[in-house]
Image 1 (tube, rainbow, N blue to C red):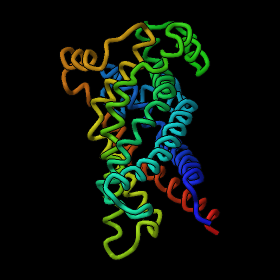
Image 2 (tube, rainbow, N blue to C red; image 1 turned 120 degrees about the horizontal axis):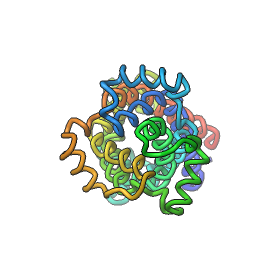
Image 3 (cartoon, rainbow, N blue to C red; image 1 turned 30 degrees about the vertical axis):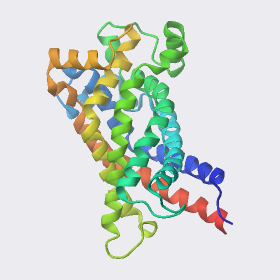
Image 4 (cartoon, rainbow, N blue to C red; image 1 turned 60 degrees about the vertical axis):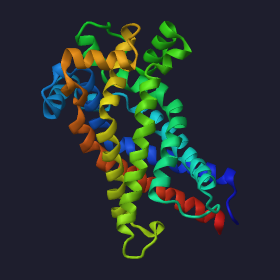
Length: 301
């Protein structure tokens, strides 16, 4: 039977969750290094220095600090993202006057992804806030900004609720939106351009194997981060340092970094991010496409 919109949304949501899980399990250590280097650029001389110090100070488990909220963040974000992506694709088809199942151009898919990111940001912001704080907790304690005892998921959540209430989970929402909406235009655009490249020999995009999907997903992930990394740096600062009190907004934080540390500070942690982006987002799209295809076949049989 044909899938209706409700079933299609459920399939997209589940496939997005599978993709988000694969993304975190593949790239979490590099994401931890990114957040540490963004928030405390003066403590680390580069990726190798950050990895070495983290291992000496906290051990191997230090690379997986924040994995639980990272899983929750990525599962919630990608579930909402891909469910919204399917919906936004239908909206884009209506706007440009295409039939219900007509293929969209790479530009149209990129636009749909950008629209979908606005919905995903609302799901992502609270869980990423907890993740970023856990990842930078050791540095916050070393700097004397906070005392010991706030290094578990539950203690971070309780601290946010006690100091800021429910709205405290949305510290950094504006910078999250500024990162996600343009970023996912390039994310989906890069992915679709990659898939288009591999279908030049007459194959359809649905026939692509694991390697072309991995490469296309990696291109999409690297495209996103190259464009939005300075915004992500500001977001990480706001979300981590807000545990010590009210922080300036996006513009204020951005100008403060530029004035006190220079433009280079906005790119602290770019190397581990790009290293992570290729395998992590490749795994995301492979898991998404294959799980989605499997579920579609179950409903169509």
